[in-house]
Figure (spheres, helix red, strand yellow):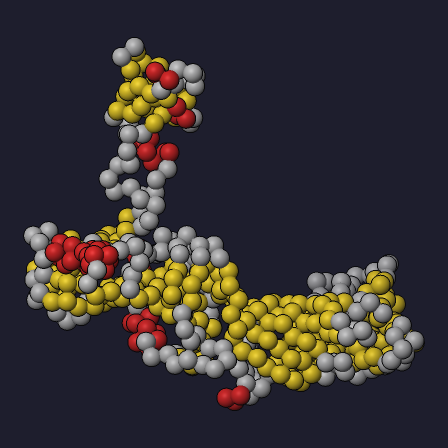
Length: 479
């Protein structure tokens, strides 16, 4: 074997041999590398669950394990350590001492530092020893052989980084092992700095009867952690992540995560507990502060229906109104019918954007809305904007207040008119909604109404092309 190959083998094997030698020495502190050997990441829509696994050589008795490579923004109270039946967790502590000017000033207060010279020309006096007495703001009080004086903190040079300071967090775990053995150790914890949302893009058909949908998971790593080669699962649903510290549920998630099969297109979906889990094949890497879109599913030719809805406006049911409301535009509502059963995927909460191709076959953005989590088989209702060519005008035609019994009880009779103008070349159907307070009753109308809730009433009015239609109704309200 050549000399170069022997050097290469020695270079690869020596770090492992040194680690094992330290593990067997009298010092029971186990050093670890910058990264764990295995990372599983369960991302919720309001946080994330980290699960690290690594094998350790433990001595019988007390062991002190020090871990780096964990998320700096973890919730310390959420840590759970899986050590098996032959070991017992005694204690754990979380430390993060980032290196900063303020931290170094606090660490070296009362100790020796160096001062840079004010003039660059004074090379022989590039820096000199001084004792840091105190500091405030951008000024520090230092003592040298010539006396005590104030200087700018930018002149202070620190001799070294104190022990224990690092920009990376460290988790120290006190572990009692009943036997000397090499065994796996699992650590899980929560962080609120990772989350995901659904993002949907839909292409509306020419006749506006169907829509093709591409669903993506929008994963956001708002932490300072570099995530490499993590096994990723996404949980859809509203989980009380930051208030619950009960980890048997989290452990059940991880028990299923180890056997996640690969899916040909997108992740595999599984119903678990009261949520949905999306298991991605392969592994995922995320840089600090990085966002990434990963395909969730595709749904083609979903039935949809476009509607025009004139929302409730300021109505005067308890007093006389001298003015009318003009240039009201109805909302453009797109209702999408999702598939039922196994074929129909649920739609996790997120932004739904809709496009449609114009006469030149170019895609045009027609609106978006955030949707809440929608189960399969339910309708997705999107408010895409307001119709340009449909306008409405509303006014109060009559008002009367009538005492009904005692001096504090009244009845209010009102008559309203809503005129709908359609400038389009096709007829349109408008749903007019009104919010009526108190106890009420429609006494007269030229279109039938529907009582949707205790205080919401609606009418469906068809308006001819390039024409108008008028809704008139009288209402009686009791206070």
